[in-house]
Structure formats: C-alpha cells, structure tokens
Length: 357
Image (cartoon, rainbow, N blue to C red):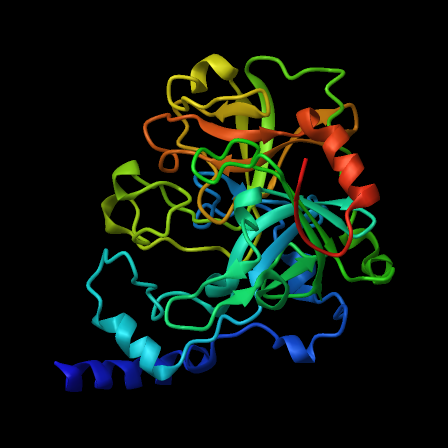
C-alpha cells in the first residue's frame, strides 16, 4: 500500500509540480506592498458569465465591477512531499483530508474575503481573524501578522493585484465564536499610500447608513472566492473544518475568478427559528428556490445593495447551515448597526491585535 501511495505521489508531483512547494510569496520577500502591472488575463478575468464556476449557482463578476473586494490568505501555505503522501492516505470524506492532488495553490492559501473601506482599512468577519494565534496541525503556531496577508486590486487570484502585511486587527469585543453574534472585525494594512498605485482597481465602498432601511425581498448581491457547490449541513457547518465534500461527494473547490450571486433580504423572522441567538447586528439573507448562496471561503466578504448609481455595503458574510441547502437562509452581519464602532476603532486602535467595544 505504501509503495502504491509513493508511486501515486510521484505521479501527482510530475503532473502538479506546484504541490511540492504550494506557497504564496514568502513573507521575507514581501515589502509593504507588491504591485505588479495589470495583465491581459486580469483585465479579462470576470468578464461575461461562467456556468462552470460560481459562488453557488451565481456567475463570474464582470471585470472591475467589485473593486472593493479583498482576499485574506495564508502567507505560508506550503506542503511537503510527506504531507502530500499523508493526505493521499486519508480516505475521501476524512475530516483532515485536504485533497492536495485536486486543489491549486491559490485554493490552499485562500481563507476569507473582505471589503476595502478606505485609508488602508478593511471590514471583514471576526471569525476570519478570531485570535492572534494561528494553529496549523503538525506545525508550530504562528500569528495573524506572520501567517496572513491581504490581496487587493484584483478579481482574479492568479493575476495582478497587490499583497500587504497586517498592521492592526480589531475584533468586536463581544464577539461570540460559537454563535457568531457580533461577527465583525477591522484590519489595517501596512501600505503608506501605496494603494493609490492600484488606481481604479481598488476603490472604497460606502457603508450603509441605515437611513434607508432594507425592505423585505429587496435584491442584494454577494461576492467571493468561496466553494462553488452546495453543502449539506450533515457534513458540518459552513464554517467548520469539515470534510471538503459537498452534496453527492463532490470535492469543494475555489474559483480563481471572483463570483457573484443575487440574493434577497428576507427579514429577521425567517432566520430566528434557525439561529436562536439572533440579534440586531445580524441580517437574514436567502434566495428561495434558486440554490444560490454564499459558502465557505466567502466569509467576511461584502453583501451590497444598489442606492441610486452606487452600491453600498450592507452586510458581511457570516454563517449558515450548509450552503444552498433546501432554501436554508444565511446570517450576515448588519453593517449599519456597527457604524459608530467602526468609526471609533479607525480613529483610536493602535497597531497590534485587539478585542474592543
């Protein structure tokens, strides 16, 4: 058996040489930002639609249409030959199986989404940055500051954009990791004005003021690089480190191009039966009968509404039971509820990691 696995590993490495060193740019090689020139591939990424790759039953976001979308990713997603062989030994559906032979390096590195709100600040979900310690099984613990990076200015994870280190992270003081109540966090990157070099590829998204409340069945849009197939809650929740298999045993995959789906704001009453700790900082979103939903890897990303000629940020992808499963609604963080907190932390939070009210 071991000999067969070794042969399989050798074959995999011959076909997937990147697996021998699955990595994003090493931290010591990253200055405060890296801004490659925009490529033809990046310009084309996201134009039109793609029925084969979607958020879950969504479509590829038109090129340049979501310039506030950012990615949180691992700076050290490197896997050795021994780890690849160990992964091959695990049976399909095992809770620790990473399916290294099927997933690309950008998929292995991807963690969460977020929204650029100006001045080097990003709004995301607290569960994307729950602690200063980052634990990877079998490896020494790291910190958010040496294990995580922010990618901005591209809708294609394989082309263009800029990479930044984290300067400060602020998680809402009453965030509950079990219930996902107050699932909101701020990140400031080390950038010293370099974001201006991204031009129109990076733009600030306005925050929903709450003056014009969302109405029942209003259209909203979610974007992200998360898993693209439905997920049954019996295989564990959207946020769990669960088997990477969806309904029908399909391995969950992340697309390189940003995906988008139109959903509906359906009102708190639809979510309260499913989320017993429902609070005013949460909002209920779904798309009954469509099979559209956000999924794991979309967490922290933007939910927007159209106000006149501009889009505004109304929500943050937070949590749910499964993905696109039997019209199960999902819980998003309501941005307007936290406006004072956001403004206060941007003005007063010092460098480092903090939990603050």
